[in-house]
Length: 210
Ligand SMILES: [Zn+2]
Image 1 (cartoon, rainbow, N blue to C red):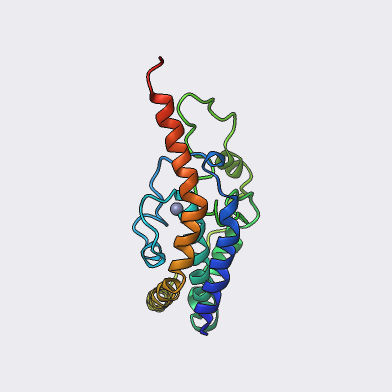
Image 2 (cartoon, rainbow, N blue to C red; image 1 turned 90 degrees about the horizontal axis):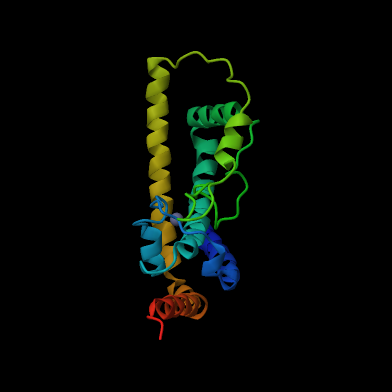
């Protein structure tokens, strides 16, 4: 089993363990389009259709994306010294403040920490994004600009990192296809009955009073 296949197996198992706890009422709707899920080849590979609730798909795409990111990070660290130094510097400059998106569970990672309040509900007294802005440390010293040669090397390294991400992404899609049946069965068992119940409830509410 390859490293990717192995990690996909572990991540799909984790998602399958999480899925029974999912419930549509526990998660607020999201008005904006998710860049991670929309049109994701990962979901096609997993055999997940468009009518599956977003939180369910997001929990899977995030787990898969983390596998890709980690392999690309390792590759960058080992093979792309300039990009690695650049990213490490960025991290150090960015660290220290409160980051509402750090250390989130896969189901919430990458989502807007402050989704628009649903119609009719109270607006938030404060937002997580606002707190994060207040907690930012003062701006660090600007560093010297890169030379033309350094920029060239950096561009080439970024291209290699992109290539790595694409190769890993393709391999991961193939690995994910092997789990289609398990994924489909779990959605049929844990998600569809809840969605159906919600739809029944909504249509009952729409019936005219007797
Ligand atoms: Zn998503």
